[in-house]
Length: 458
Image (cartoon, rainbow, N blue to C red; front, top):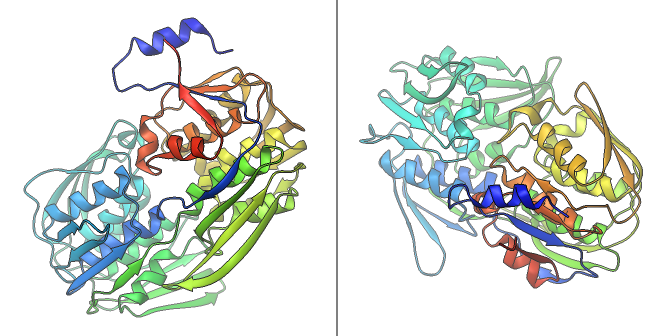
């Protein structure tokens, strides 16, 4: 079991700390609809804010990350409101129509909010101040500062390109041709959003394709976006200063959130879950392909297109998983899912090797370190070589009994709560408060399906 002394120390800290324990369960069953896709939700609000007219958004993720985006856009002049029927209404100001905010923009824990909004601010000719919570203030912003400086924006940050940050947008922005040094949908999107208020054509070239929600939604709002395979990689070109027209958006369920229920169903013997309305954009579905290679039973039903995005219901049943080698080129399509994949690997028979994990070191936490520390605390053996992680699965229930340090990372918290469902002694995490950033109601929803997640006893 978790060390009582450490648990007591945790409880003596600030009141916001919420340590919980996930106990082993016999089965999971039922239907669930995970919350709306976070990536799509951010983009729907941002593009609605720079479109002309009223955009309606149904199924918006109402987690803290997205709410921070909405609050920032209001400070920049957009009118955003939620009606009692759960529909969000965004009255946009048009491309280039933002006004100087009267207060600092607080992005909370959301790197997506900070980096994508920086793209829009880079061509807004005034100075904006941006900050975030303790976790976000540790994360580097240089990867968007570098290309946006070429557009003409100016930045003032803390050492290492960290928040708080001042952004002074370019009065005469310059179209650029930018080759991304590492695969990053956030960097690509920041440049494409800056290009909206830039004359001429701006091109971003990716050596490895990353999630294309920005390109899909930009076209949905009326922007001209062209893609071409070149010798350097995939070239995405956008024509600046379009008239973006308000439209209706239906947000699919987030595959990164669905991943926790999917893996829970995979590792608990006899489990069967139906997970509804899951976004299955091919550039986001790497985890599901990986799990199927490991032997998981995942069936797609009612597959359809919604606003250009592939959506389906998933029927997932528990069974034996086997270890595999996950290639580095798959990382961009599942970068947020490695914590929960490590949980599946821990329960699998044999070794699962995950390659190309460098990006995990600059997420909400050093996720690679957080993953291996959580595995070690619960009796799982592993090896790290460079940017590769090999997890030696136990072929069934893991020992458990550990307390996992989440480092304010929602995905670490949810992943190890799932691990506790297929353990001998349960798994505790030091905090669950931050889960609301992406998956409001996660604990209650999983418990309704048969999980046993509860606060640690005093």
